[in-house]
Length: 338
Image (cartoon, rainbow, N blue to C red):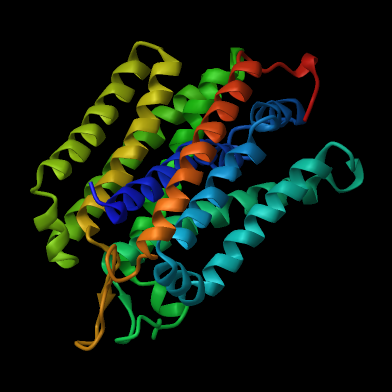
């Protein structure tokens, strides 16, 4: 396996890890006012993600750093071309963080902080999917790899469909998380909601797949006939079926892991479909797609960074595992609030 492919897989792994871990944080924020009836139930949601949400965001920072180190041209194009969208994502993440920290310390403005928490969850949950949709669809750029579109061109029908699919995916993932972490009456409300939103997620995945096959990237559908594409598809379909079966059997933790696997399957499908492109070009005949070859750093840089990643990534994984082990179990109002 060459270094460029290794780094392509590593960046995809980090992005999938972020989507799985911070995905239930975002989904819990989206549920925050949908199902709760009082401050006690809202405090259950905050407490369930309180010890882990900031650690989960480390995966996003690590993925961005890996993209910068391994594929700097792709990093430059994405962070300049998607500048407004990225600023809105950062605004959402900052707003969520501030709202979580101040919500239980500032009773006078608790409703303002509640709205901040919801808005700070909504913006990233939607815009991450919009970004993925544009990367799958292709981005308008010139022969030197510079973005030639605008913020509004990113809000095309396909990208918005992928964005809504991602939003519902996180909503479903958050419901799976809360089914694991809560109990009694609130858990029953979450379980009923989870069943409905999971079917909506399945329908949106089917609609997005059909749209992709009929109207968008032809080479993507061709790539998915490779064995890697069949593996990713099997993971997606199998995990969706596993989650549904686990929900029927009331095995909430198994359903949560099935939801996580479905996110990995979707990321895998996007990665296999795009390869060897990182950011495909769209529109101009003179445009050149940014691939794992022409967007990569030097071989020496990739080797050195791979050694650093070999040390750093296991530490991130080990720390995440330790935190989740320390804060395992149900959350209860009487144990304190976040």
